[in-house]
Length: 284
Image (cartoon, rainbow, N blue to C red; front, side, top):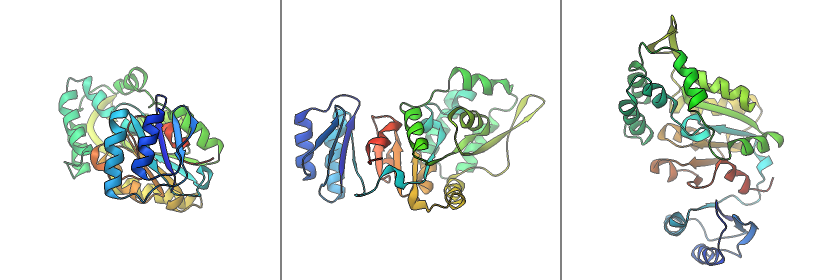
C-alpha cells in the first residue's frame, strides 16, 4: 500500500529517510517540495500508526497509507461536514457571540464534538435555546464577517468537480449557511438544520428532523444511491464525533484538524495540510 507524506513546508531528505525506515517503505519519491510518496510500506499496525504519529506530528508532516491501485476519479462523491471542516468556524458559537454567550455555547459544542455529550440532538437544542430572541440578521453578519473557507477548500472542490465527482455538504449546523455555500461553491447537495424564525427573531427552536450522526450517515448513503454509486465510492471529510458514522460507511474517511476520537478512526488525518491534501493521496 502506498505511503504518502505531505507538509506545508519543504520535506527534508533526513525526515524522508527516517519515515521510510519507520514504515519499512520503498523509496520515498518527491512529487513536489511538500509531497513525497512510496509505492509500498509495511502493513499499517497500531504500532506503526503510533510511530508515524510520534515522528511526523512534531515536524508538521501529515502521513497517509492509502489503498493501492485507486485513482481519485474512481470515487463518485465527496461528502463534507461544514463547521470546522469546510469552514474554519463553528457557526453556532459565532451566532452566540452576538448575545454574549459564546463561551457557554462553545463549551457545549466542544464537548459534543469530542464525544463527551452523546445525545447530539439534546446538545443542539440546548445551544439553540440560548439564542432565543436574537435578531435573525445576525446570521448574515456571521456569514459575511466571520465565515472563512478552510485552507485548500476551493482548490480541492474545483479539482474533484472537474473530475466529475459529486459534492455533498451535510451539517449539524444550519441551512442559512449551507445554502449560501452551495451557491458559492457550486455544491450538488446540502443538508442541515433549520432555525425557526418568527417576526425576524430566532425563537430558540430547530424546525424538522435534526441532522445528527445517524442522519448524516443516511444522507451519504441516499446521495450515493441517487447518483448510482456505492458508499465505497464516497470520500467523507469531518472533524467531530458527529461525523464518525458517515465516515464509517465511506470508502475513504478524512479527519480534518479533528478531535482525537475522530483521528484514530479515520482512514487519513490532515492535521497540518489543507483540504486539498486529498489531491495528493491518489493519481487523478
